[in-house]
Image 1 (cartoon, rainbow over the protein chains, first blue to last red):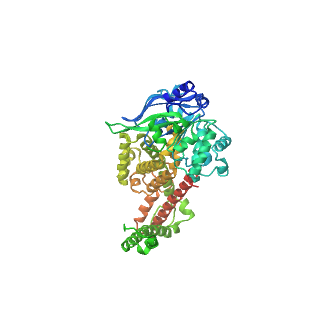
Image 2: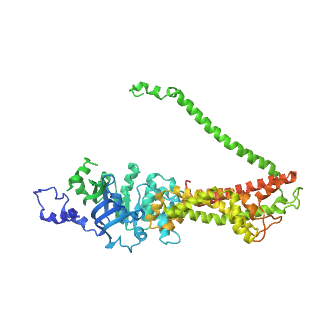
Image 3: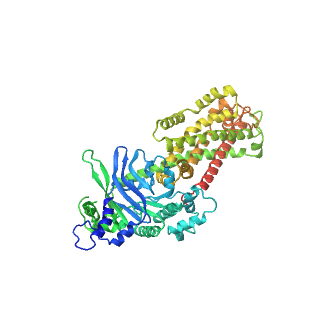
Length: 296
Length: 299
């Protein structure tokens, strides 16, 4: 977590050239501090995730801030999806998965034994890699969450507003009672986003939401994320570095470390910074190699 | 074929005439074999259905559905109402016991038990039960139920339920397996609890298949004779009570009547067979329509 804070504190000390080290970010002090002011939603400290005895993520620390898009990038198997699934405790569904360290959501420890994971998931929505609409009508897909939350009566307004926010309304308004399985992949994914935001979560987690989509559908989802940012906090896992660079405010770069003795790979958080800095002036050599395409 | 060829050869390479002769022959044999298998399966089925319709449909009349069984089966006359009512009641009673139990058992195995010891035991017992001959099921119910409570329709229901249970469990389990885990994840991610995920997402998604399995079990049970021989006794008039006194059923009537050399009796057996097939068919169609209403999949 150090780079983030050193950036903010060292900046005023060296306001003018000569710039000696690569550690000084290129972003202007105004920008950096403006971004920094957003309140912290998730505070992760020394988080490790185990699958049985296998350690998937080691000692990751970062903060997710409100109304920002935070991107997790890195090669396959670096633990970014595992990390993401900690935020809504979806890892609980995997046998033998165990979390160490602290993960606070507005100061509340999410892994406190008294916390009900179901209540966590009601507040933190998730969109998956593969579009996974229910084999129900478009309407029922969106109304599913609100009904679950106990909303009674006519949900037409809720459904319309969710679909509008997901930029899908115009395409499906005449076929709300038709099966969601008949939509295209990109439409299905926007439907899944609409379904996630219909329950008014505070955070939307996206696990490679565009990896199964074509470039046009991808660009629509990216535009959508920019619009959703005003209302929600978004964390996105992506394999696509350009996507992270385009959409995110902050980027966390994960990589794998091979354990020599056991020959297992553990994910480590290398760098967590404002996106511009990660892509233009990374402080870690591994990050630089990855974002410039020399590794990955 | 690994040598490089000029593009001008490309067309020649792709032409069918260049593909090997033996490959085309093998393809032809395999295709023929598949069509032949299909015909071999369909022809007997068509004959059975056609023959039963031809012989049995003639027996249909108002009296067939409204009158009691004749006192003397060697002569024409009377109806089949007691057996129709008996079959409907006994099979319905069996389904009422076996279907909820079987579906819940499958849900336990698939959604809760996982690879645990109890679910493996249930799965194993279901397999063993599938292999138990139906007459043994009848004997079992005879010893534990009929000897105590006497001959009645419920004994038949119990025996048929024992037959249906493993079929319902295994077919439902297979259908639940087919529900993609993505759907469960999507439901959990919306803050849905496990039992509610099963009720609102998993079961509706598997409904069509579950209904098919249940109908298969019901059809199998409705046509069973052996388990009923020991358990329901015989009745000549309609008995609408499952618990009070002996009953009768269509398979028993087929069995009884077909054994005699008299034309009136054999005709009655054909009529009963036709009625039984019609009942199973009608219920299957109804179940399909109902299931289609509930689960909208690819419309």
